[in-house]
Image 1 (tube, rainbow, N blue to C red):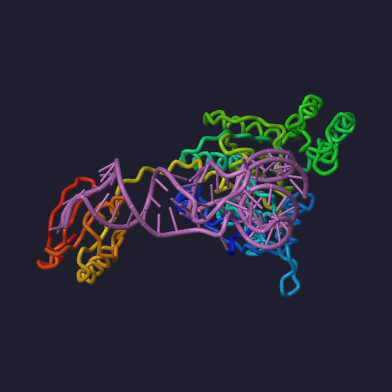
Image 2: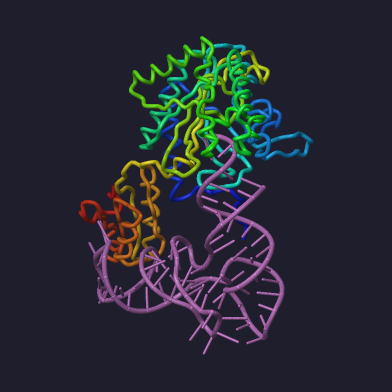
Length: 404
RNA sequence: GUGGGUGUAGCUCAGUUGGUUAGAGCACCAGUUUGUGGCACUGGGGGUCGUGGGUUCGAUUCCCAUCACCCACCCCA
């Protein structure tokens, strides 16, 4: 038997309903915030991801589905959504056009990782990217939009925020942190020592007990921000406060992708195992320029559909649709005509096999139909159909032409 | 990439200290009611015991390999 590749899943019953509901709900809310749909290719030039996500990141360094195509081009399946959208934004010259452009998207992402709970090799994200708006109010509105989406889906979460500073203040802080880490490096674990070189801010996030105590008085980015970053971060927190949105200030919060500046945030769920981030994002004011466009401020986020699929509370749905069946094989032609007429406006299931009335009712009941309609011997003779409402239990016989 | 766990019916799992036809519950189909759903009872269909190799007279059971899934590290949505 040929089976799906490791870490790749078919989305079918029963999760398919939740999947579509998540995408529909998120899309609807994004549209209300002024976002329009964008679809970009799944396959892009590898260089795009190297330059945007960053070559030092694990995502690009070891997790990409990268290969040489038949034309000799180095290409990769997208490991995340932002890079392709920024590329499209620049390619269509919207950076030169100016103004604000907001996009939402959803689709599969690919990372060659070891699968575990909440982590697949092909997974699906819904995300938004806003270009051309430098105001921190846009950051706030994005957080508010994610909150709206999760609230609509009935998902519990907590919010973590941080500021990663800008080219003015981040490098200075980074130096200061590295210096501090070198002072205590002998007490730190193996992983931490490696991270001092690759991604020093990640060291702050180490789970090791002894590391944690040693790191307790490490310098923190939010206390080393330049004036502009500090003022923006203050505005953001006061906006959240005034809207009654609870959040945790997390100086250890680092985004895994290199392009982030200033605002960084994460939505976390306590109910889904170790991979607890259900949405993440932030501001990336440098990325458009990095990729060859005119400098354009931007902010965005993505949420992991598979990670929230179990948490979604689906709206209650009652019985709906029509079940049609026969007890005499000759009646099937009539049934099919009725089915086609009814399908103009509702869901219709047709059972082709001749069965007992009891069996038809049982089947109709099980599939959640509201109406069960059957043609038996007597109905066949009188050109009638027997109709029962499975909710009210009312039943009647009507002429085949008058069945509505 | 590292570590641990699990693969037996559509699903959840039992079982064989190695020995004829491998079981249960749920689900499915039928009947009890020759035309009345959700309940009950009775019967029925359905399994290369993940795959490949080894040991053995004999392997679903023991050994090895492999694949997949699950959980954690790492990383991240």
